[in-house]
Image 1 (cartoon, rainbow over the protein chains, first blue to last red):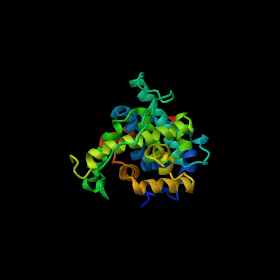
Image 2 (cartoon, rainbow over the protein chains, first blue to last red; image 1 turned 90 degrees about the vertical axis):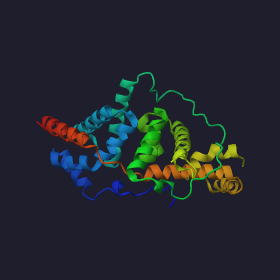
Image 3 (cartoon, each protein chain N blue to C red; image 1 turned 135 degrees about the vertical axis):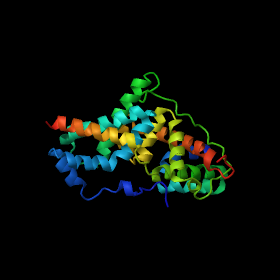
Image 4 (cartoon, chains in turn brown, red; image 1 turned 60 degrees about the vertical axis):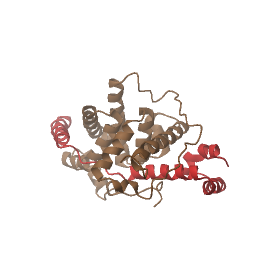
Length: 207
Length: 79
């Protein structure tokens, strides 16, 4: 399987009824909106949790995101997927929480050193399916641990691009960054995560 | 192509955005250089693992909090 091709996971399938649910919610049908919430709450919570790294903030950001989405549904044009639109709202809410808690640490917009001017040294491969050594819950916890260790400027770009599957352009727009900045941060994030996952996945690793 | 040259093209290589000539150069380098090959493979695997990961179910109290709050505030917005 090509890792960088667009995957279609069960949770990424846009169900056929989605346009109707969105239309119904737009006209004020709360139960239609609640169906949409039920469909995406797990993904939105993972997003706000990965950005804020704080459970209470993540819960608040998720709640605010859904409320804002309901209030502003009239502005959703249907040019993008509903989920992509929702992600952008949730990212903004999560970033506000993060900045409030750590005002001096979060500067997404300023120039940052992306480092990495030489190829990392690596002699040991991971084998074909290293993730299968872990149960799903354990793997989920490893992934959220390693992503939480990245600086916000890197982990947020990675979250949008590689987890939420936004395009480079959509990520740049959502974070008010240039396309080259998204690309260089994404590469840095991927290489850092690769290095961190090596702790768990290398054949002789301390798993 | 040298290792450093590969690094500067790596982002576009991983996203399959390179023109075929440059891509071929990279693949030629990868065939010869074990270090780069391992780094590229494990980076691809990293992306794949995150991309394939399904979110965990919401903790019970998180789900309750969300639905109670939405129920209350959505009706207020609508009223």
